[in-house]
Length: 513
Image (cartoon, rainbow, N blue to C red; front, side, top):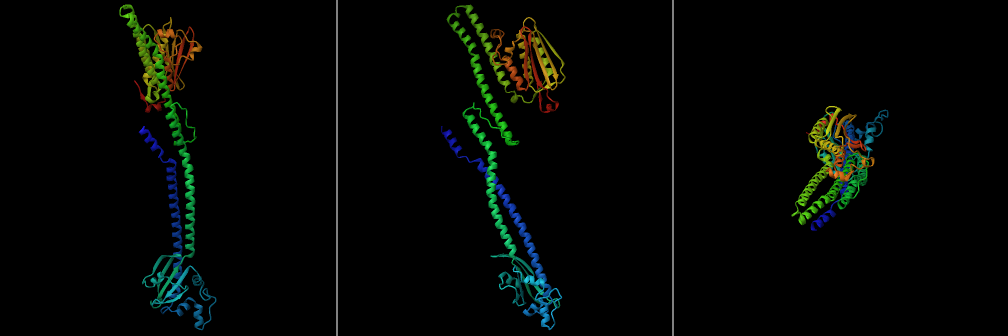
């Protein structure tokens, strides 16, 4: 009782398979989505930074091409006049040249740069004094760059976002004298804005994706787990009531789950079939053994009362008891054979037999046993090397049952004909007798358990009514058919039909001897 309570307690604590699968599937998909999103974001960011780097370098190049023409260290006057050629002409007393591309205060490229809010221009003299700037604010990073002796590129972050800074020391073209330092600080306002929007969008999409994948994963997993839950429920019902007829409905899935459902139903059918066989076996044994046991008990009681002093009663009782004991032995053997006949697909799945060999051997054996009978064998229409999927002993047992049955019910003409032929993809074996025959009404019942056409005569001949039932079970277990045609007073013909085994199928099969 404690074990059962402990088992039930553990069972209530079990975690849901659906939740586990949803967590695994959703997590896998979400991680994949996050990795994909981060990859896309990194690619866009890398591409944007590369473009901003090119912009910054172009600005440096544009200013450098103008500033290197100065001969003296940077001052406000020479920097401004150099950046604006027309201003220099006016100071020199010359008229401005409006036909040139660089007309106006600054040429187009420089003007566009100076008015670009994203780009800050700082020009320092050799003494690190600020000479020119288009911004009122200088960052610490820009001031640090003034102290560097070599050109440098740097990406740094501020509260406003990432900056791309390029510092270049400028030397005069004429005398290679140090003129000062040019610093271009690209604040990348649009790029930072774009990346921020992209980040926000990806976070929003990630949240939506998480919700979507959780819901989608639940429905997907639930569709997979639902049949398993149904199987669990049916298994519990079968466990409580082995005779329950609950089965899994056809889920119409051409996958492993659909195959599992089909095999699950087959397994339940087979289990219930075994349970039914067991009950039937016990019922049949208790029913059929009741009579011989009662007969033996009656004779023993008779012996106990009068048999000790009466030799005739003693002899009759012993003889009758031995007959009933022998009958019980044969009955039990036949019932065991009947039970085994229903399980051949599990015990002998790959056994095959050569029909020619089995027929010749069995008929010869029966001739030796029943020397007063003429048993004919005709296999002229049977192709050589005719193979069927059947355990050899079972094919022999089938033939013995039918030939023995033909001999038992023969009358004056003691002759049995056995023939075999090949038709299309099947082999047909016929056993013909010239005995009593069977009425058409009785022909449908002779394959039932313990059925006897004439119970008195069958008992006299030693039959229990199980032979034809065993033959039918064996035949059907090997996907064959058995039938009878009979005329009262003329005789009967039993026909067995089995599918031929293809040569390709012989590779994995075992011939039985």
